[in-house]
Length: 455
Image (cartoon, rainbow, N blue to C red; front, side, top):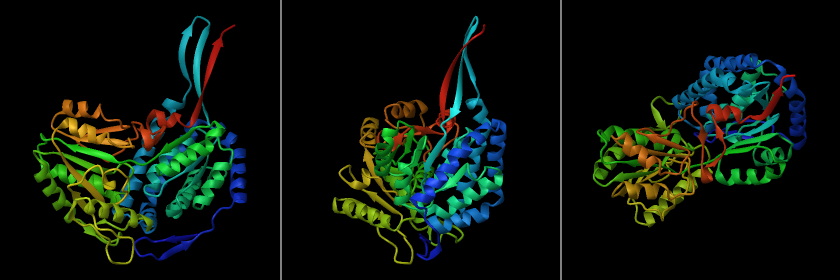
């Protein structure tokens, strides 16, 4: 399998893909090793994952360079991702014992009732390329802490990063037969779906997630899917600083080239401030440096996947044909690599794919609305339900709007952020299950109830 640099289209390296035989062998090793890993006291497992975090800090420059080379994100954004992963690991390791320890629920005379949290066993993590460290640690860190063995399949677009993760986990003290990496693309994933894992955890598109969920359903094991989004933002008319809000929401839409599941993908602006907001938004986007992702100051690099160029090209073309206006950008950049101009569209509507289908690229549609009620209706007019955001000077107003939006996360005066302290979950086509928080730690366990009567 060839690893291609999306900024130059050059082959970085070739790696050997796994086969059905090698994946079956890896699963057998994991199954044999898992009980011994689970027998290690929880505090010691936690210390191993803390050491992994320290190794990420030690090697951050090398790891960031590898990540940028294979996915194309600007180098500083790669550093930010690794540091963000360390922040999540810190919360998970500091809180794991609290949520994995046995709990006494009731006691009445000689009878006491307890819950213990046992590991699922051997879990399969089919991960994503856009944030391989962040979406990876959401799964394999709490899974390992809880006593599971893990088969980790990095995206074929983040293979080298996946191998780096494996090496550092082993150096940190995770036995080689407790964490194995499966290398390859669709065929590798298909083999994994046929193996008898005790749980599946997938991050990626709705189409693939739905296929995995249906494929493994007969096994009656947990299957969590963190899928895409068409995340809306509403800018109310009472905001105090239009320029800063425009800059913040532009960053939310275009950070990592818009290749984030929780990126801002639709913007609705109250008609009273629409013109000023759009003007400031376009100015912000035009100020960014586009170029080779390892150059200083570059904010927009190439898309990771060549195929996505056609998707954003089609969405822009359809919108323009339907009456939309391009304020800036609108086309591919003629140079080596998978580059597309950061694009701002106005005069859009919900008949256009740019306002309905996930873009996962550097394009955004901005739509004028008359009031909060119209904003709520449009924000809910989607098959997705990952995040939604409201910018307003009034917390009460924002909470009222967000309470009427069917999404797993609500933001007030912020967007495109994730915290390990609260659940990360989607609704509708944005997925099922939760990672992070106490819910995401216990997702890798099966609770057992104990009814204990003293003689």
